[in-house]
Amino acid sequence: MSATPTTTDQPAQQLGPHSAAPSRGRSMLTRLVAPVAAVLSGLLLYASFPPRPLWWLVLPGFALLSGCLYGRRARAAFGLGLLAGLGFLLPLLSWTGEEVGPVPWLALATAEALFVAVSCVGIALVTRLPLWPVWGAAVWILGEAVRARVPFGGFPWGKIAFGQADSLFLPLAAVGGTPVLGFAVVLCGFGLFEGVRQCRAYRSTRAVPRRGAALAALTVVVPVTAALAALPLVDDSAQDGTATAAAIQGNVPRLGLDFNEQRRAVLDNHARRTEQLAADVEAGKAARPDFVLWPENSSDLDPYRNSDARAVIDRAVRAIGAPTVVGAVLTPDTGKLRNTLIEWDPERGPVATYDKRHVQPFGEYIPMRSFVRLFSSDVDRVRRDFGPGDKVGVFDLAGTKVGLATCYEAAFDWAVRDTVTGGAQLITVPSNNATFGRSEMTYQQLAMSRVRAVEHSRAVVVPVTSGVSAVIGPDGKVVRKTGMFTPDALVAEVPLRSSLTPATRLGTIPEGVLVVLAGAGLGWAVFRSVRARRGTSA
Image (tube, rainbow, N blue to C red):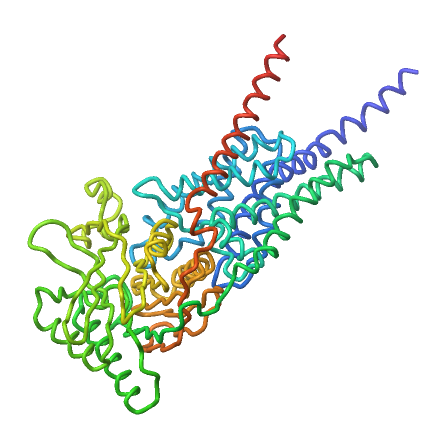
């Protein structure tokens, strides 16, 4: 009798240590599932952005992210959200370190990822509510709205809507702008996860609430149906006739931050390419443009103070014989520099100006200069800060009202909308991407202009110093485009339009409604949580 316990205990003692190791291994792998999935969700969001035509990857990206966040506590949701934000924004914003090294890039991506992390805490909180995908998608848009405004005027790069230029959801931009477009995409992604969750519940219990399944289906079906219903708002017809526009890409002498040390060479390149276009027009090889658009920084020499620069511009504009928009840097005796677009008449010279209203922090001016210098000496490349203008830019070019949004401004909803409500029949986004080399930045920015075209039902012409320059129809399709780092001139007949889309008319109202919706969801979730804790304590 006494031998029996001995024989049964001995194998248990021998197997114990060996069985504990696999158990610990499985436990560690289990703990890694959520962090790995969070990073993967961010990478899927990144992969959905241009230049890749894989916009649909955003849907499994958000489905996976919501799977990571569902039912999580705040601390876990923050950590997983930070991992997802880094997986998304580190590769998306890698161009910011193209010439200044990894420190500014890592700092910016981490700062923006913190916004994503906080949003994910809110999303995790509202997953406890009925119809949570709606509340969760609104919370994501709330995060984007905050990120687009603070700090230093905000940084909306990476708004989900900007990755949807080729998407079936794109018509929703005309309904309520980038907030409504982004909301629909996020809602659909969250709805996909909720559908999977309902299916798993059915497989485990063989009883799934019909209401839950129906609501999960609606969160996917409604955004898709709304996008299809919005298709009539996408219209490329010429309401006010057409105009022939020319976009000049003069190219730069070399890549990198020091390209502007050869400011005269950049100006000469654009003047030379304009004069070549004039020769092509005379030879019947190109249509005669009604107006010509040069890019931002096409003349970093102030033509009001530099007689040589003025003569070069004047000669080129007279050759083409059409009003020309010239991007210049103005250098007053005192005060800040101005990033200015000048309307140059072939007979009268400069007749109107537009000063860029949203200048780029850490690019055109340096906030907290002495502190930032501790991390990067490149801040001293910006020796004199640029100051913002305060007037909406709309030029009358040969009878066509052209709205002006300079480069970085295309990322801000208000900066483009103001030009359309100000009477613009056409939008131009003169840009300078030479400092970012052959990175994805130029394609990301081009996608923004495509979304803006549909949002406001306007053709958009994008002249860039080094590419990619493009002509975009009011339907968001690229009509013509250049290669990178090659001199070129795009000449195209573009439709002129004056009607206003619902998005243009409503302005910030759709975003405000979604922000209120997010606040209501968060408030409801907090109230339920507090009440549950009190009930437990009682």
